[in-house]
Image (tube, rainbow, N blue to C red; front, side, top):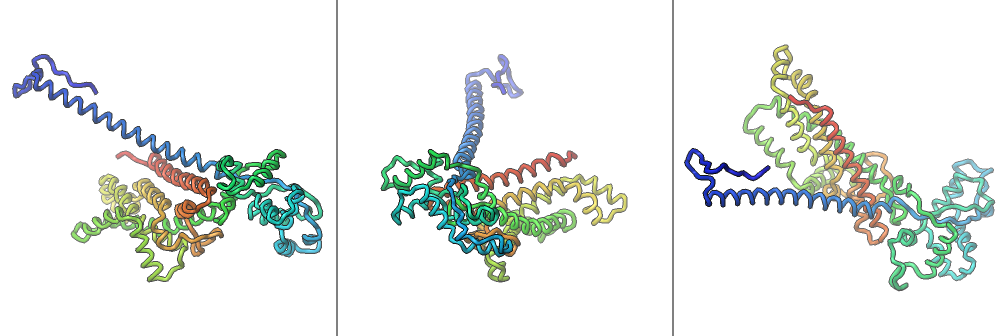
Length: 444
């Protein structure tokens, strides 16, 4: 856009001289205002993009290491005098017998064999702290899967503790005074000795993607929260989608235009702007207090989020139905179709892409909600992965909230990694909505 420059002695119908000093000054101020507005708009867009990139970059920088975990290789002597004989036991009986073995003893023996100079009880305890408390379960699983190792000495890779993991990843400043860090100089010396032999590795932390929550940062996983989110959203979809779509069809196609329907429409629009925690209070009062449903279950969480999602689905479905041209309805009626046939055979199929787009956007909002679920108790510490809608469960946003409140330094990267997982699902759902709109959208 170029600044307006009038012709010499140009006048309008009122006889105004556009080249007069007064009018030139007014045009100059208008052009300055126009350029200032464009600058402010460009600055706002640039600043928004900068902060978005900065936020995502900061999350990715902190969360990338959360998908990696440090492991330490040690030579374990699978003593046949301690471990059960697999030849005389069935598979299940052998697994049960192995579960009774003190695996911490085998780990301690392997570490003290590597560092024979460590003799004191306190130093031995510090030496075993190089490995995670989950190393015992790892070793037990190794024996169960490979019973032929019994009676041999084999090098195995076990999870390091979170303090060791943070040192290897460079997140802990080891140059500070010994009194100001958790690891002693002796423990750092043992770690350096193992690193010099190539026994310390950083690998993809598959446990983070396949297990549930834990008190230990190196043992936590997001799969329990992902499964809880999936079951909760399934209940939300099965509840909110049919109710929302049928409500939209009735209000748009069949409901009479009177004061009652006007009040219903106003309330639906107002409910879409109600803070989400209010729906949590409603779920707490109705589903838990009045109906006595199981606390912290995906069933209750899904029903609560269905209340939150319903207004969004109804509004988007009504907009999609209203966008269908009246000529479609007139043509169907002209061929003898009943009002029900007009709605369900012609209008709804044509409006379905818009309905699905609005539904997916509503579900994406439900996936990112935490406040309503905190009110119904889905903030509990859940270790097991839920298998049904009545099992205790948590969801990704609540899991992120729990980890962010943990004092351990290792939970910072786990929190950021969980945010990356949540953003992946949110971006995927919004991308699916955009794809559906572009693929099936019709221009009337």
